[in-house]
Image (cartoon, rainbow, N blue to C red; front, side):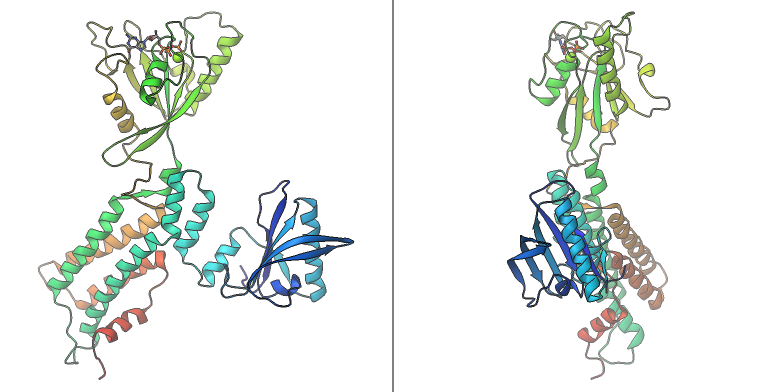
Length: 452
Ligand SMILES: Nc1nc2c(ncn2[C@@H]2O[C@H](COP(=O)(O)OP(=O)(O)OP(=O)(O)O)[C@@H](O)[C@H]2O)c(=O)[nH]1
Ligand SMILES: [Mg+2]
């Protein structure tokens, strides 16, 4: 990626629209757009295309105080499709006439430039990409946690403390001949490292990966007609979402509703599906039955968990013929209408929608079967991606290694401790940018009047 180039790209989704955004960034952006007085702001102007004058809204942002850090022009032009293509080719021609290169921006290049030009850090760049991708409230809040600096601030605080400790430890190596430079006492270092580890572990324990927020498991109620699937569907949702009747074959289509199951470590959102019952004894399924079977079959194949509902005095349905070969879908056996079953020693989760035992153990079992973890960003949780998690984990492991060295029977060589602190800093550098040896040295000079 050459940051000295001027780049151009359409910033709106493809297709017909009333207006389209064209964005240019780089040293020749103003010349290509014929902007003589590049003063930051929005202005209306006209764009001449052959015999036509098109009204254009133009946002001018001279570098370095622009999104990318270099000169930026954003043109809001009328229409989409062919008109925009003609405006684009006119801008290409203008660049040719000036003899300056103007090339198509590659994906994410504006934000990459913002990062390379020091306008944003890596976490903010990731936050911007997550914001664009977000579809749910949890995902949007997670993205904000990255771009708004939540994780960055935390990592910088940890890094600042490690820099302080590294400064003190290295002072012990480099300046022990100086009267006023005292290496940090080992027990003080141990206390500080323990408190850093508590912060890191606490953050990791309360973290949820953005990848996890993306995945909403699909849970489907299956069983014979009249088994009580729709009654369970309604009861789990806490609303009369679908028709329930004592007529086999009441449900024909597949219904889907989101359901949140609360748990001690946060809520789990699932997509609950209810469909037609399977009737394995019907020897001549008609057109409608086959269509219903096809729909529920598709639902089964996209499910992560099946709730196999069996009414009293019935055998559990054999799901084998309806599943793909090698399918790893999990199956929970649910015994329905337990209020009607007098003596029932069958294995499964006992439920009733009309009386106890109720549904408490069913929701708990669904959660356990799906791994028991949350996929909803609660207020007490922090969102990060797997890369961020492994950076914080590696940093914590390095500090643990340091702690076991410092806490050991023999006094550890100070150089080892210093090296591990630097390693922990390097690891955090993967989140907040590199921490240079100068940062550590600055700390030494800030705390001690070395070289008085
Ligand atoms: N006593 C009792 N009756 C129930 C219970 N759950 C469902 N029923 C009754 O069983 C009948 C069938 O219930 P549905 O929920 O419609 O059954 P379904 O499995 O969805 O049936 P299809 O859509 O036809 O496949 C209805 O008359 C319900 O009132 C229960 O826990 N106890
Ligand atoms: Mg039903």
